[in-house]
Image (cartoon, rainbow, N blue to C red; front, side, top):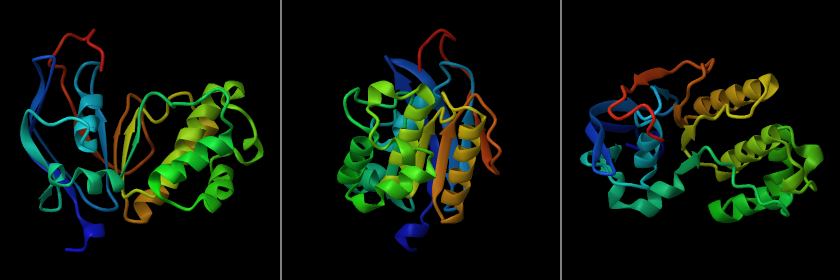
Length: 214
């Protein structure tokens, strides 16, 4: 099977945090062109699952597969095909929008010449020279979306991607997600908000105190 057409999947996946069980027996399969939306209360493990899928932490049980391979067998290759959007947008106050997006291309090894085009796609084409300290929360999130596009990754892992986005920003997000899927990309997103996106659903039940932070 072509590496670009590999599914992401696991069976009997388990996660522990701080010595406590977060979830176990988790099974899913996401094929190219498909999205998986993960829901559940605070503390159910949505963010923990995304970190597992990114290869940032190891599962307590089970194996996460890309095709037939364990993602832990080649973490460098897995990072190259994965783009992770977390809660924090990591905006430096003195760096401009251009600086942030150009750095994203350096880290991903992609073409910096596409920065103006991508900035325009996420509604920041007129703000390339604006420093991070002058960006609104929604504009900072759009920078994060620009980084996502510039990574040119097959797998998008999104943690509450609608955070700080207004109605126009959320519509933009959904369009970007649909375009990624249409190109054969894979998406796993955790969210408390509904996304107008055809997707599988995976609901996690809380296994720890509802006050536990994710």
